[in-house]
Structures are given as structure tokens and as C-alpha cells.
Image 1 (cartoon, rainbow, N blue to C red):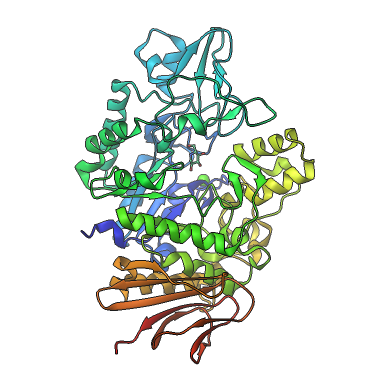
Image 2 (tube, protein in one colour; image 1 turned 180 degrees about the vertical axis):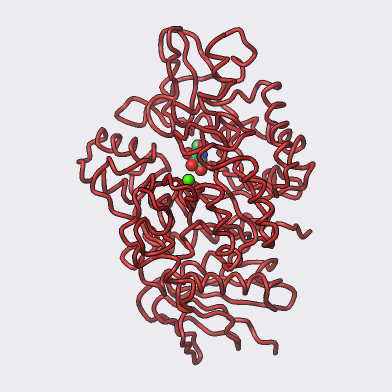
Length: 554
Ligand code: NOJ
Ligand code: CA
């Protein structure tokens, strides 16, 4: 059955870095409102705002101290309402980030729990009494998952940062409070949620130490706190008590999920509308919390990961397709390496993921072909995990230069540099020194240069969006089935989309060389990132060419 959210194109905004409106160097809601025309012009239909709630901003808003207020640096509830209304006028819906695994340590519940161990809020979190650290689990952002409570023989548990204590989902009263909060948000006219770190809510309740996997004597906690048996009971209740009541769209960050769980997660009666699958995103590292374990990979690996995921997802439900987000380095540098500023290559990469089956997500700046930076000092980084990964790499025996290289390649700050609107000082993002250093190449790669330039990456994204949303091929490109096309070259990615009798074959040349693929049909070219196209009894693909070919009816 078709669902309303299948035809959306989502644009992800990292509010702190999008547009400052009140001269403090920090992006805000009024800033976003002032850029809605830009987004409408691009053609996206939905905006996902990373957390905008009250927070000490230790993890830039993923540490919430009040779920129902807007962070003061971002604005007010009135600003948010205005943003929702102004977006609606431009046919764009809003989804919010929902952080349910943890709160900030400055949340009222946690403060009550600290003050008084007998308070009902104490059981909203995970505490263990004793004088010793309860076990050897390592948090995602480094160090033990346990933090000592001051002046008491007690520790609290955090899967992520120290200032992000995990909520105790075993407590029914806590769950009820969360559900009420979610329902309050849906009543405010938002279209849905991106659900943060949701596979972490169920823990291995034995809390036993495990064999260590690092020189620190610790073991990564994802083995014992991610996707644990019993999580399905909690997720079913969450959906029934909240999302189901409002037919909202939900996209879950579901790292650690196995493909045989997809029916439960995204089937017709699944817990969520769609999930993010990270298999292709993390193909260059052993895990998201071990950037120093670099893994060599090929285009064929990328192809297999993406197309396997598509085929599994297609059996159960709908995909959420992305190549970037606020936790990932820029896709250009990650997947194209030395060609990260080659605009044909950047467009080709964009098309390859954009026309997969599912809802496409575009991360701010991706539509300009932004790249990674190269920073020379660890003090230039803001991201918690970058700082931790730097020190951990050194602890694991790498030199400071090597550690910096790992961090440059993987830092979440790569995606968080202030948005480059213009070539002016502070890039039109602000007239005040921005909270995070701009990327060096903003004078070349910026929105002003691209919006009016028909050959730009931005205009190519605009074209792709139009083709998917508003063309005679829309049904096929949105709802059509997907299947891999076998290629004779390992470094060509190709797939077929089909809907009733309509067939569209898509080819992407990931090399800077000419390649040929067998031609089995007569075609009309419906999208081409280059000006030329050549074929005889074979399809000739020029370096970094992307083409969408509609099979002609016989
Ligand atoms: C995943 C979010 O995307 C990331 O930015 C955050 O740091 C962690 N979850 C913790 O909330
Ligand atoms: Ca501001």
C-alpha cells in the first residue's frame, strides 16, 4: 500500500550551523526561516531539524534538558511555530529529532535523582551502588559507561557522553512520560520524527564485564546495549502509544540491526516508517567508534552494500536513503577521494543514491558538493567523539599525526562547519565569528556561486528532485521496484527501477576512465550529468558519467 511519506524528499538541517540571524555566530530558527526560499527553490518537501530543544549543548542538542522547550540560542516556541507555518506555505513539512535513549544530566529528572536516591526519578535512570566501577563497558564517546555520583557510592550509566545519562526504559512511569511528550509534539503540527539511537534503549541487564577489545581494558558497549533481545516489546509499545495515533512519519537510527529484523521494524505493521542502514556509510572503518581501524574498500564493496540493503529492505518495507548526515564525513571526500571536487563525480555520486528505492535524505551542504576539511590541530575540533578518537588512537599506539589524520577523515565536524552561503567574511552564515571554524574552500563552494549557475551541483540536485517529484517518470522513480543490473565492470554501479511496464535503467561510472556496458534495449535518456552520450551495441560511459535510461516500448 502506498504511504504519504514515500514521495517526500527530506533535507536535514543542523540548526547550529545553518544560518545565524542574531549576530552571535550560532545558527537559529529565525535563520532557517530566512532561508526557506532557498530550500523551496531546491525542491525539497520536508525538513528534518536536528535537536532544537533546551540543552547545555555538550553534544550539540543530543543532550536534552527539557523536551518541551526550545533552546534559547535557537529561539522560542513562537519561532518554531512560525517556522512550521512558513514551511507549510512553501509546501514543506517539518520533522523533529527525538532523543529517547538519554537526557542531559541537567534534565530536571536527573537532578532530582541525584539529589534524592529515594525519589521516583532515581529509577528513571540506571544507577548501581558500590565503590567499584560496575563493569568494563566502554561508552560510544570514550571512557567507561559509568560515572561516579559525587559524595555517594553510586555510579550512573551512559552509552554516549558523560553528560548524557541513559534513561531506564524498564520503568513504565518513565515510558509513559516520554509518550506524553511525543504526543504533545505531534499535536503541534509536525509531520514526524527522526528517532535517535533507538536500538540502545534495551540493555543486557546482567551488566557483566566482557573480554576487553582495547588497550584501555574496556569493551565497546554496543555489544551489550544495542539491539538486545526484548527491545521489540518496548518498540511496539512506543509505536502504539504514540506514532500510530497520528500517522506520522518516523525514521529510526537503527544501527546494529540485522536484516532478518526488518519485517518487525519496517514491515506493514512495523515499529517505524523507515530506518537508516549504515552499512555503506561505515564501509571505511571497523566501527563508528573506532576510526583508527581503517578498512580498505572498493567501489564493488560500496555497490554490494548498497544494493544488498536495497534488496533486503524491499522485501519488508521502505528505505531511507542517504550518503551524508551530521555524524558522517562529507560523502564527496569519503567516496570520491582525490576527485571530491570534480563536479561530474560529485553529481554522479548524488544521482547514484538519489534514485534508489526509498525516501532520499539530503544533508545541508551536500547539494553544493561540500568536502571534508583538513585541520592541523586537535584544538580546532568541537565534536566530543573527535576529541575522544584522537586520544584513543594515540593510546592504541598511533602517532599524533596519524591520529589527526584519522580524525580529519572521520570527524563529525566535517559536516558541521557553518553553511557557506556566500564568499564574504564568515560566508554569509553570520557577521560574528562562527561557533565552529568555516571550511577553507567556502569562497569557491558556496550557495551564491551555484544557485544561478545551471552547471552547478546545486542545479543538478534541483533537476534530480524535479525528475523524481514532478515528471512523467515520477511513479517509476518513486514507487518502482529495484533490482541490481549485473555489470561487466566492477567499478560501475547499475540498477533497474520498474513500475508496471515502465523500466528505467541507471548507470554510474565511479572511475575517471571510459567504460562500456552491454546494451540490451533501445533507450531514451532521461537524465545525464554530462552533455554527451554515446552507444553502439554497447553503452559507452565517460569518466564519472551518470545516466538514467528509459527503456523504449517495443
Ligand atoms: C546519534 C546522533 O546522530 C548523534 O549525533 C548523537 O551524538 C548520538 N546519537 C547520541 O545522541
Ligand atoms: Ca544566532
